Amino acid sequence: MSTIEKAWCRSLPWRAFTRRVVFPWALGDASVGDDVLELGSGSGANAVELLARYPAARLTATDVDPAMVAAARRRLAGFGDRASVRQADATALPFDDASFDAVVSLIMLHHVIDWEQTLSEAARVLRPGGVLVGYDLVRSRPSRWLHRLDRSPHRLADAPALDARLHELDLTEVRVDHGLGGLVARFRARRPATAA
Image 1 (tube, rainbow, N blue to C red):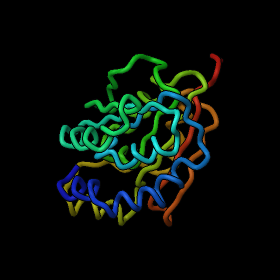
Image 2 (cartoon, rainbow, N blue to C red):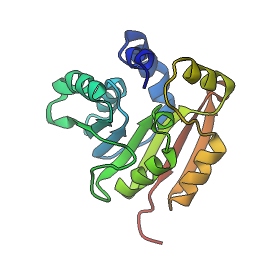
Image 3 (cartoon, one colour):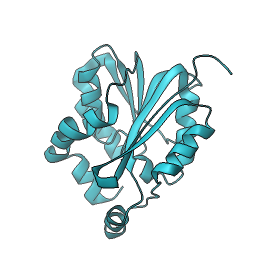
Image 4 (cartoon, rainbow, N blue to C red):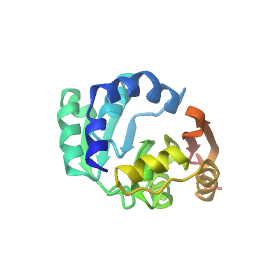
């Protein structure tokens, strides 16, 4: 993540946009259960919204960037044992299989480069019946331009590629929708409650 993106992710305008637009659209009416994993939590803006929206949930927020992990720890300290923050690579999560009721990924996949492996890891750590929800930037001229301008490493997917990957992972109820004029896509899938 570039310096510009790090600053933006810590800003008041981003938190307000997240609370009012991003978060409600990305999660919709999703039920997340008790144990939630957030991938690429950044400074914790979405984590705060998750914990407020789901007061019974316990959240494990993760990010690969130590500066973002530190920022999220500060932001989530007031939630006590309902929130923990860990440094983790989303392509090799340090959690056992079937550890979480939900995995949430909010505008981070394009930073991972190997987003397909990240989705594999998300599916692996989901409990039977668990849900994967998220949204991300998709391949478009404006998003490519933005990331070239700030020189941040990225690899943008498109909605058909997200849909195809989720179907490859033995997930059910797969849904991928466009938003913001085709600049982003939200996605949802569920791990089958029982083995096929």
